[in-house]
Length: 294
Image 1 (cartoon, one colour):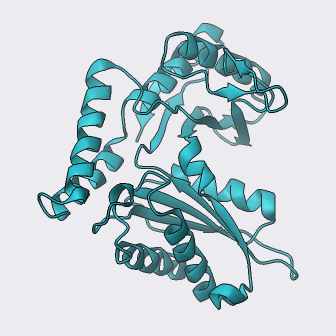
Image 2 (spheres, one colour):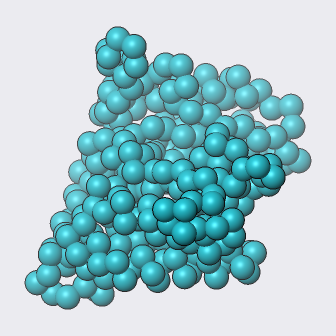
């Protein structure tokens, strides 16, 4: 095991995630740009977004000044030293902050003080999963505060929405969340949705959906149909890019499901802005790069 390799390559993962939008996201934004009417506010908004993407990549600068909550998903071999891995990731985060790839974005909730290294209790966020594998998969999602603010959780039945404890009730909740968000989540966004679970696991699972590519469809046919219907109906709301109207309110809808208690039926919705900063890397047993994900 070579600890320096882990620090170096996790730092590079952070740099790429912060400055370079994944190909699938950029491709969907280009499609949206071509769909909108030339001269419209939606077309102009998307042109500015595309210029921002190109400029960040060319100048090696963050795509957004809000570099967000760093959520790391690690899949490791059974018995792997996760304490070492977490320690090296923290060192990489502090280095990326010093070099300007991350904003000093972590605040002490009691004192209001800014934490210069972005290293604090629950910052960054780590998820570990052990399994029968020889490599280490690391996926990083950078979740900005603006889009985090428009996430919402519903408890079914919801009489205000006439939403029952079924998939149609889920659909009504998700569309209500999109309508309430308007442009405040920096549309066009991507939704991660969890059906079921408890309040904590529901939100966590909704964010796990952001690991899926935009072209990905749920293997569960009824959920795949739900994803597709919600996406089509959301585009008809005419919220559009940045809430200025248009054909593209969402880039994608990704739905997962967890078991639940008889008394509870939660629908948890996380919103990701157009700056869908999600990248991953597959590392060997000594920390060397095998291949990049996304």
